[in-house]
Image: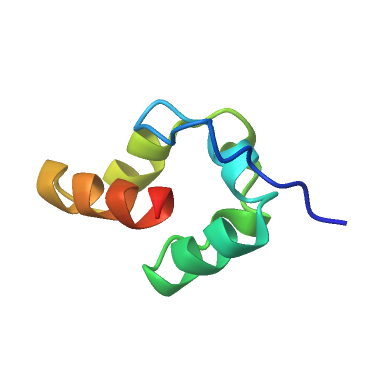
Length: 71
């Protein structure tokens, strides 16, 4: 069973990937954006920003992804 991120909790670049991949909608969006973090052992410790940078996203792209995740 997937955990839901509380609506009141805003996703930031410091949000842990491990928290995001437990949310079905967030995990789906990350996968669509090329961040296949679900099976990555690094996802447990990395922040969203670290994962995005590892996949070549720049700061503007990361901010756009965060906006999408917070919708």
